[in-house]
Image (cartoon, rainbow over all chains, first blue to last red; front, side, top):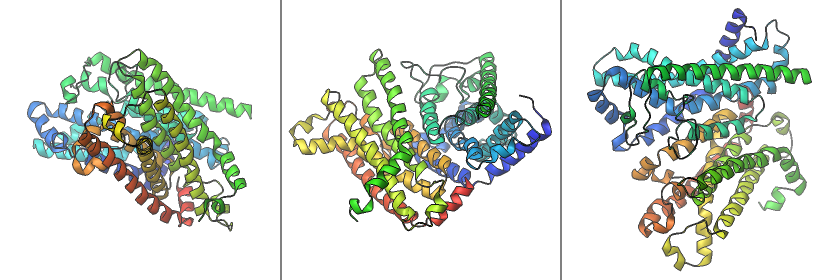
Length: 269
Length: 252
């Protein structure tokens, strides 16, 4: 898989513009966020109650990491499911055959598609995160929260988003996209949010895409940060770095496998 | 409109031929991990009855909902179909009914098997009610979430006109409903959104009191069915505007 930077940039820009202009991306995030706001209306779990209490006990950086972690628990469901339609779209609209005539490799286009579509789908998620950061900044009376929020989001959320985006592209090459969506949602429940020890799952491993080891190892969140349901996991800085690297490396492997599979399929035709 | 005139057998056979893969594959793909889970759970502290109940109440309805959400608003031949004397509205309704009846049949078979092998616990006061009422109560376990998720999937598909967005929204609702079951049950105005109380709140049902059962299970089942009816009516009205679906097909 050789990369050509101008073509990669072109593919990225094209995919970004196409995805960010889709009203469904914004509608999905808006409805999902409204639902989450409604579900957090229980007096003990409202945003205001949780974060004013947390600000009294913890540093601003830790509170921001907790917010990024909370966002990263739920909103990647939308990212993964919305990206599931990107690769089948090329096939359905028959532009994939047209793309093969262009003077660039398929690998370059795939990477451009991954980054462009992922970044565009992450924009609504980031804006929701930023909305929460503004509230935290006002509760804390500290504008430093806003510049601190950017690196926190990149470190906590981005490796997991790259991981799930790569799989959303790769799996839909051979799976019917609604079926992939269904399996992805089941995966998200079982392998990221299911912390019980009595059943095998990836949620307590370094492959957890919600940034579990990152928030514990780098930002120092501890098991009590998970509120009423402590998960009894601790993370070291080394584990946090290993988790980030492992997630990105797995995404790279998924993309290489996708490229290999598409080349093989083309050779079969 | 009687069902016989609504659909001819040839037409039904054609629709089954078109959709048999997802209709069969999705429940089959569900069965495999559930069987695995039952085996695993056999060696852990959860009971297999709980896992089976969860599969019937939580997994089959979402499979139906996702199928509806991703099937109704998209058709490769939609433009051609709009020129036919047979309206797309009728085709859409036929597809919706086909998916819901198929998933309902699977759910009924599964819950009957569950009850037959003594894996389904009912509240103790249910022993005194008539067998017909008891049978109907048991069917409410899967019927209410299936109808709600199916009808919401129907509306969402027609509103957002996108397969991926429909699946994402429905999946999100399903997941949040499971994760926030405590919050939903504890907030009165949110309680009608309690989709899976049989598995998540009242299991094993033979230990719950009558008032608890009525508040968290029986009332919410009827509320879900009433909401489903409203969503179906809205969906039916949205389906009348078939030309707008073409916009969705290009926007995807």
